[in-house]
Length: 201
Image (cartoon, rainbow, N blue to C red; front, side, top):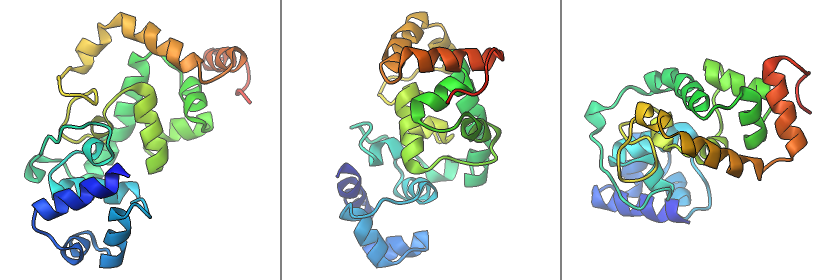
């Protein structure tokens, strides 16, 4: 798996042994070894701290981009501040994509209430759910986590305002989203946000 090999490569570039990296993360050398062998995946909070320590992006570590854009950990916001902004960014990207919370929940296979809790910042997604959210909405994982990065998981930068002006992308993305669910589910999710029906089942 890409994650394990990239983690090992960056750890070695920084001159850390597995035990030294584990100490920085509050983990055992055995756990670090399991991550590098891809026999275990780190929880989301460890992934973010790992990216900070190794001066890279979570997108690069997870193989979502192929270019490593090193970042300076000293300029990054504190982890609790990241989580504070996560819900705001999730709501912002959903609004730009013209989706209801129910439609987003349908696309990532969670309850609408769960999605709304993410936006309100009362709970946070698992790493697997977060990756699905980033892929579904086509945004950088690091941007969602309020780490220094571009909006899209690619090399050219674009602001949320510039993205908002790309009207054709909304239609293109909606076509892709509809391939994931039935027309009835999509329509039910759309009606739910207007209050015309109960929660989609």
